[in-house]
Image 1 (tube, rainbow, N blue to C red):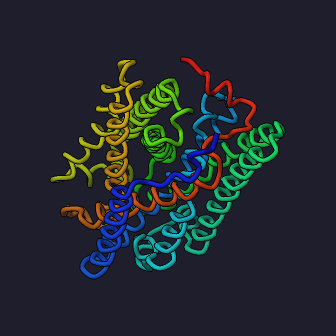
Image 2 (spheres, helix red, strand yellow):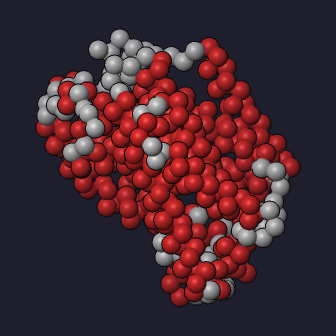
Length: 388
């Protein structure tokens, strides 16, 4: 059943990965020499994206365990391998926080004096770093426990492992909701300390999971086409993944509109500052494009049933969502780094290309460390014969 366990990509794919990795390293080095602040911002963007991607894998596993979603058992190894990306993102985020605190305006002495009340207590640098350490500790611990328990079941086939992972997942989900919301406020929203949004954590979660689903779809289609999951992932699984992507792209739009509409309607200075900066000059077309990529195209393309069951079409839509996720992060981070100026994002694109190559390399290494599907999971047979 695991004859494809030592699957390796084709020479062309390996060459492409090396080229992308080289582009990422060169872009980061050139950016550090020519525009250091943008280079650090790009590193933070890419690292945060890697953390979110790893978390989306863990969240997907935990959600399916907690809901008893047996249909996803056949493709569980994909989000498990995706979660291996998280430590690399954590290293990048930690590097930015430790070596470039100036990325956050409130760390400057003059700006720090302008903070008051709870915001002054919360945006305290030692406390800020301590919270980041707690976030990573919680995420990495639960990811390791859930994946290790799943792999243990491959060895002894004990159904008790499924029950244990269900309990771990139920414990992880609320902790994830709280810690990721707090991390998003700390790392992203505090780039503009004068701004706040009460649903920013939900907004960043919607982007995390919709883009995570898009990556799962692309990897599932790739593994299905090249062999490792050819006998396990069917059109029925792709159909459900497509439905989830459709749902969460729409959820992203709902939260985006809710945040924008309420801020626009209230018209309070401390809330509008974020969107005013992103509606000036050439930022406005990017703001519109962000909505089109993250919701407009996925919504229209995935409405018909057949598109969710057609791998080539589903892959194209997933690629659009991933591009939208990059643009969404770019819109959240770079206007603060560049003080509103807009330039061609060659540093940001190059660093993200390198991060993409890292994702594939780490995914393949993690994927090869276990059978391509949970061979002794008690619900595997039900998953293999699943029909919508």
